[in-house]
Amino acid sequence: CISAGYSIVEGFRVLATQPLSNRILNSRFQDVIRHHRKLFERLDFPKLNVTQLLNAKTILDFDREFTVKMCGWRTAEEYQEVASASSVLPAVRIPLLCLNALDDSMVDLTSLSHAIFAARHNEWVVLMTTPTGGHAGFFTGLLPRPWMYDLALDFMSSAVRCNTTQEDP
Image (cartoon, rainbow, N blue to C red; front, side, top):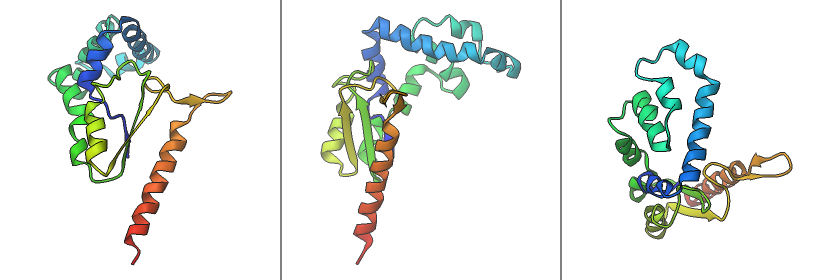
């Protein structure tokens, strides 16, 4: 498996200290909503107020208007706590690559502390950080494409080979 290893709770704390990054990420989410606005309005999601969503000033505001209402969370903070991979890393018992870019506006050493601890104490967890890649980037080439897909396939192939080797008599 592959996951971001950071704590979403801590990631939102980090993001709150970076107003420009927060505004840019929020704007990108809102662009998706604008692009699909007619679909949202046609499907008539009773809990979703598209106008309020498009007026959200931060990612946390966006999560309160979208993620909480669409996914049934009580609060955005509950979502952040439950959705964080960091809370389950000690219990992982399959090969897991936690991939994080250090230029991600939601990542710092505090938000990665659970993944760092897990990588040191759980043989199933591998933490990989890269200097660049952003929040969901990892693009390369003249016609940019995410290189993380190749990394994911290599990691999974290696995990399968290791498992197969261990099962041989």
